[in-house]
Length: 247
Image 1 (cartoon, rainbow, N blue to C red):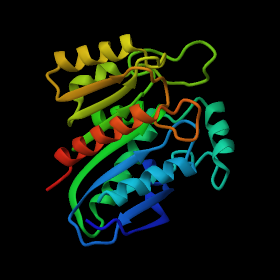
Image 2: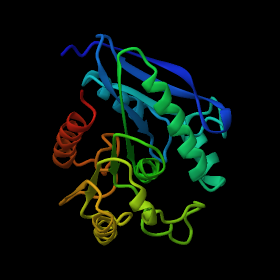
Image 3: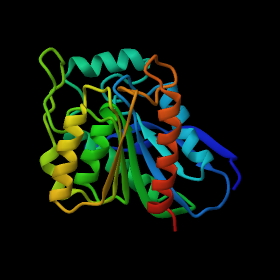
Image 4: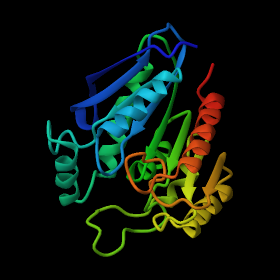
């Protein structure tokens, strides 16, 4: 497999008929390719998330990261855009689902697409990956330490979102969850609660919790980075998407 790729900024359809900015990375061979919607973390549509998007393309996937903050702060630096969205209480769940639906449709229509689409998200994006998989027909979803799936944000956190674990019976696809044993949001007890809800609903999922890792252990540019956990986590992602998005 060649790792040659092309990456560029594009406009894609989003919720409510809006066009929003997104970062597309695609292999240069003819495919067929599975596709991944990369849902950025709360710090925003930043260089680190674009690097992750390119990483998927290097591994043979069509990958698209929609800028979830585009309407709130078009053209702003990631930190400024994130602050603007936080001040408004975060990205509304309904809008997120619409934006991921538009991204998935865009990917399915690309030359070389095999029709299968998964999502992956980190931090707030992990919650949103789960939300999308419970709201749309997808082929796979990965939740990397998504907070506030089974509990509400604590006092002082300016997010107007609530728990969504009750959506577990609506999960449309296999789910991979990657968590840190030292994380507080979500804590190990919260991931266990979500696992129980998914088991009760008879859903296809696998959760892995890494010792010595806390929140954001994939983030290479932050002190939270844990190389061993991230390396093992990436291997599980490749195996999972290899099973669910190939063919």
